Image 1 (tube, helix red, strand yellow):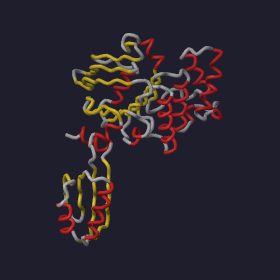
Image 2 (tube, helix red, strand yellow):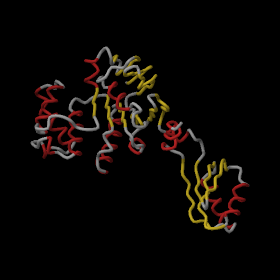
Image 3 (tube, helix red, strand yellow):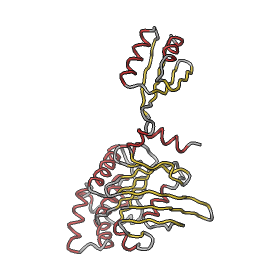
Image 4 (cartoon, rainbow, N blue to C red):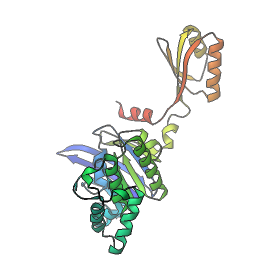
Length: 305
């Protein structure tokens, strides 16, 4: 559905995006992460055909996105972070404008508008001016407008973080549902939590390069069976260290005051047995916490020099 090859973008001889390569099929939901300034929004706008790349190619549904812009744009739904423009139009007028712009047949426009108003829970607000809407209502209106022409590709530029918790949960569910409908989704965000549930692929941009790209399940597989243990003790530190020194499944151990930090390959059963051994060894354990490696660890690994 989307094939990006050797994509580069420079401004005033400064490279912003460099040699990006990735492929998405119908139903894929890509979570695009990266520090501020890494190029996420720029990449979204290039795929949306709003900005031309310096070099490289983008193919969408078999079309060259640079040469066949008129064929590609109807296939794309672009949802920006903030809603802009047309403050004095009503919701109904706004949707009628875009129904015409998308060239929906006149006989289908009223039905299509009613359907998206119902879908986004905006039917009772159809006569309300946009300038009087809340942030969440504006975001739902932007989604309603995008649903009008039923695009194959959805491009979200950080649409979740400004929403309240309910809106964030609804947006995540929507992205998951779009994938189930066979749509291809790219979600650019600064928040790791936004992509964990709805996305099946993750890409991490760092300084304009794809520092990581792969399936979400590869994030945990990257560290194999390793995990972290944090053990806080009130007394018995020497005994605790002696017990841990005898274990072959402890990869690394660091002691800071009363806190023991361990990188380990213990199974859950072995971890539980370690706690029993510490208690039997007269170690006064205040806190014992096991944490699996995840997306946050990968993000720090590939974006930190």
